[in-house]
Image 1: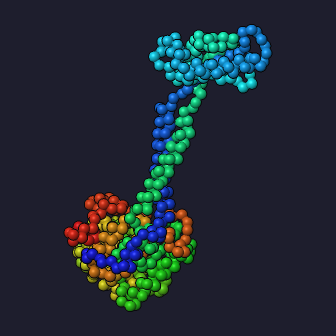
Image 2: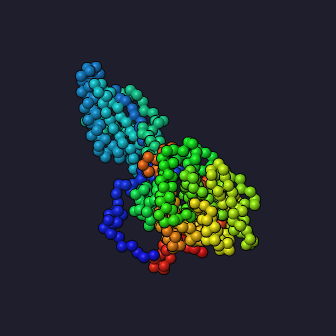
Image 3: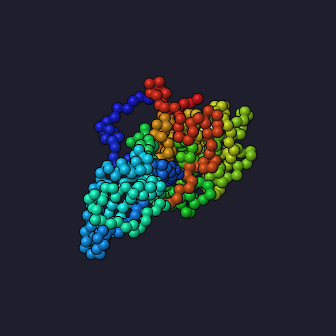
Length: 501
């Protein structure tokens, strides 16, 4: 594939703008990964709780209260208050010095005095509170008792007239003064973890290289936007059809617009056979093919829908058709009998007014069958019988059958589900369609929540396959998974698109 030389206008179109931010895509990714947010929050909450618990250093305070008076026995309140204030100042001087600390260490046989000793006057009283704070209840109590035993040796020299009577005896504290705050920090950790994971998801959602809105279709993809189909709430057990009375006006109008464009292609270019494909399953190609056929049928066209996705046929399930054993399309392709007539496998449906070539059972490998029964011969026969032939193809990124199917068609459409497949994979699929030399009309942007006038509501099923999907089970195709491990585009080696092996 030749490299494109971008014009100034194209470069401007490829530049970043606020339109590239898809709020719906971000919200959808956040909802899908809500478990990760909760898990991250719980992990951070537990980590904060453990950290605060392990690093917590409790403080226990033991205290005693003295009643201060003078030795002369005076009960003069002013004298006692003055003596108390003076004694408190003396105590603070003594406590600030190393002398009392050394005496306490020697008394208790300690090498280090890890405690805070303080003295304070109870305001407007002759009560003096002496307290000791330490890391254990025992240490605080024993150090306080040692201070009481040793302070007279220092205070009598400067305040010999003061008398201290124990008013409230010291006791061993039973409760720490401080709290670890582990619960509060675990709540903080929960919020930090949730916000951090939320931020990561938002950034990853923004950087995710998918097609998130209509503007990005032509900005990121090597094709044009053909029509945009809005998000629609499922109101029936299987699929989403415009024939349902409950389908929204916006949903019906999108397919009316698609039908009009197909009519114009048929009128101007003589196209009659249109192949509808997508990069992956569950992007809605079968639903698009079904609704396009219904819209054409309403205009009184003779329409046939062929389900060439024989590995996982879904059209019969969407239309709830009962396919007779002798009309299974897979049997026609897999049979070696060259006398079989494709007309004998057509299933008519009066309710929809559409004829079908379908199966309700899948086959593992039909590549050889497609080559054995020339698709071009089959398609040409159908063109002579019908005004319009709509073909539902296999997913391009998962299997190689698209080459034969697209080559037998007059034109192709690629269905791109909003915010689903990686841009690189979609462009590889577009390259694969382009190599067949069958005109690619453009992209049907499916399940778009950014489409103007789109309906709102809970999304439940969109994409034709639903529970019937499962390409990952089949041999070498399983390695691609849902989103890619599909080979990268390598222009230097000349391999553009999907590996056709």
